[in-house]
Image 1: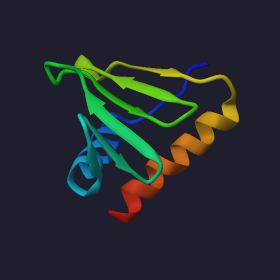
Image 2 (image 1 turned 30 degrees about the horizontal axis):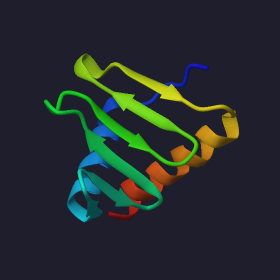
Image 3 (image 1 turned 90 degrees about the horizontal axis):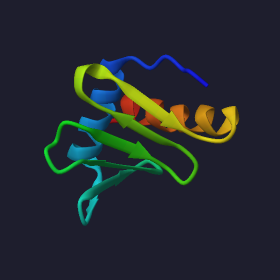
Image 4 (image 1 turned 90 degrees about the vertical axis):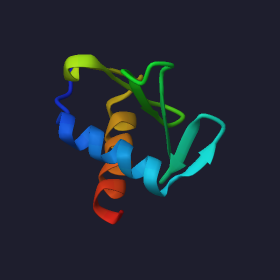
Length: 85
């Protein structure tokens, strides 16, 4: 299950989550997604209940999900954040 996601898109969505989202402990919640980083800030995580995106150094990323439709819904949430904030 390999999907192409533009690194600028991921970073933009994450930054909007940090700027406009509600901070809950070490996570930012916005538009049905949660975003966080690891302890050194080199890896960021964007997730919902069914999908987790891990985005790290040199724009490498991995996705964890069970069904393609889960990923599609996740991507719609990210797109909504990108377009609306």
